[in-house]
Structure formats: structure tokens, C-alpha cells
Length: 169
Image (cartoon, rainbow, N blue to C red; front, side, top):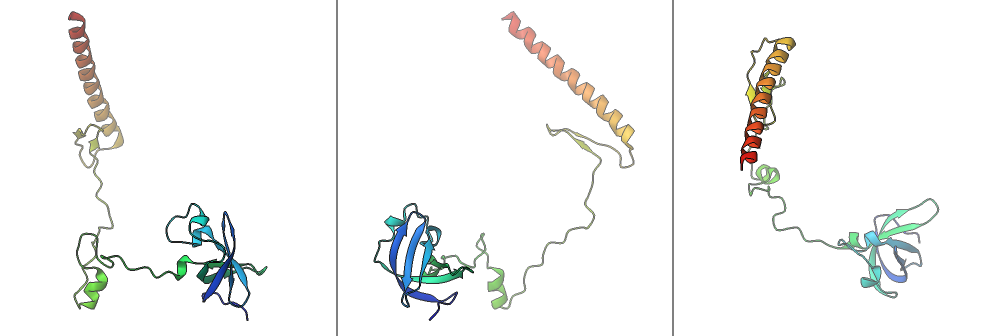
């Protein structure tokens, strides 16, 4: 009798390696349970979980062309649903709950197909230089240069004043 992919079998651990465990199922067929398929939690050392001779349930997850069988123990485990399964993060009812309760789903947000584009120049410190909507590139560049030169001179003045104060002390 051949094993079937997706079916769960009772088996016995026949060997353990650092990368998994070999399990023989009822009909004499054996396969490998990779260490990542042993438990739903992280497994550092498989010897902490399994020993040779342990009886385990395995699910056949893959059969290669060369006949190698991949098995999983963690896919046979029944995991309980979390308490807030199906709830929205903010505590509101999920869309599934709303559908089942017969309520209308909230409308999705409508976005304009044309994004709002502003010609205003915004600097990294939050300074905003207003420009008119019909300004061409040269006008905007000259305004930027003038504004930049003003700001640089203000900065130089502040640095010079500070240096002058520290020298006097």
C-alpha cells in the first residue's frame, strides 16, 4: 500500500539527525520529518523534542520523483484559534462578522485619480516658500536662490555672533 500526499499516518521514529527525524509509518514506508516541520515553535535541537522509538502522527506533504517522502508533525497538530480571531485590530467587528450579521460593509475610501500637486517649496526645517501655480522653472529657481542666500547669510551671522561670544569669555 502506497502512502498518499495529504493523508495523516501513525508512525514510529526510527532515526534522528541534526536536520530532522526519520519516521516509519504503519505500512513500512519511511520518510523524513525536517526539523522545521517538527513543531510550530522554533526547534534548536530535535533531540529535545523526539527520541528514537517515539510514536508520532505524521502528514505526508511531498513525494519526490526519486521516491523520497517528506513528512510533517506540526501539520497534524490542532492549533486553537486566538481569542480575537476574526476581530479587527481596533476592536471593531471584522468584515466577515459584518457580512454574517447582515450589515453593510463600510465603503472603501475614494481617492482622486489626480493627486494634488503643489508648487510650494518645502525645506527640511519645515520652511515653506509659496509659489504661484503658473510659475515656470526659472522663476522658481530664482526665488529659491534668493531665499537660500538669505537663509545662509542669517546662519553665517548667527554662527559669527556665537563665535564672538565664546571668544570674549
